[in-house]
Image (cartoon, rainbow over all chains, first blue to last red):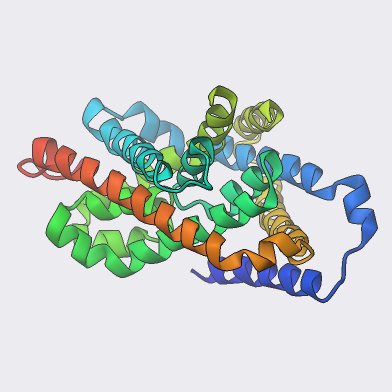
Length: 201
Length: 93
């Protein structure tokens, strides 16, 4: 949660600087964002590859467990896809891509602002932060009405870290492992799914 | 944008190779944090200098929330069906 606050503060600092008219041209000329994004993707890859806990987890998976992140992906795509039909100014591919952040707002907003434009990047940022905040706030209600998998589904990629404590508390500790598994899978898949959506649609 | 995937896969292979080299991995983690901060600062900066976004902020925010709601609703409903079919009786993993 502390990390989230710092990230928002950096975004807010940039926003304020931009509104105040601070805009160094050198950053636009060398297109710093692209290289910073490449560096970030490389580093995210390293942390995935080096994580000793991820591979045993992948080896022990069975169909029942895999269905959890799959249902989150399918449900998110179905929900945002249907929703885009009612939002005339949002294209379906953009709605699907924003949904496919699964709450991983730092990465999804950066990729989408790079691949598409800043307006959609900001939308991805706001939408995916809201997903995390909503999950933190609504976990008890979700469990009561939609079962113990509901906060894991709602949390998406965040169910492995920021929303894990609340999931563990309301769904029970035996669901914490499932939450970590689902969150790890979704976190790894975010860049792949967003890229795939824009490639295909 | 396919570059993004290639670079990430290269990173994963590098990560597997670097396993156990905790000082390098620690540095990589620090650098990850810094590059996320830098990128979001830059995103904020380009948003702040973009009048279209600033003027349309309420509309962007509204669309973002509607998308959040539909994403959560879709995934919660599907996971609910999955829970009833496979998990309710036998419990978690």
